Length: 164
Image 1 (cartoon, rainbow, N blue to C red):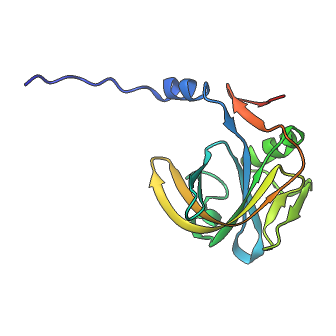
Image 2 (image 1 turned 60 degrees about the vertical axis):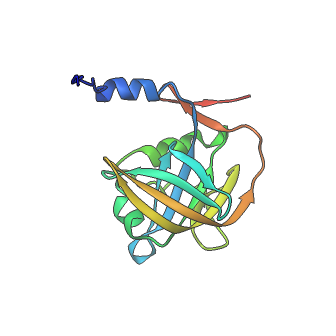
């Protein structure tokens, strides 16, 4: 039997490789303690299952809104288009009041959401899983609404970009 040494990618090598994968951009929101709105921008979002309808999103353990999402029972996902670049940057910036500049509305369930999003999903928390320096949040979709627009925003090479 031979013993092989397995090389591990450095954090920077991993980040550079992942930057080559284009991903959609969403804003995830909930209501924290005392009904305080909380949220973050994510590109780590995908569908998991059709029956039942499940999605997942990943949140850094160091995020300002981590505590709220670690204890919430429901959350909303807003799929962003090109006109939402400023909102995406605002919700991606640590230490800012993400809800200060407006451009938001409420879902029928009362959760904050991005006004004019390409799609909105109301979710009930299905599961939470620790994963390295992130939490995987799995939501069961209870309501889905389509907005206007056809072009998504994507995150590629560490920049927000747009598809024609």
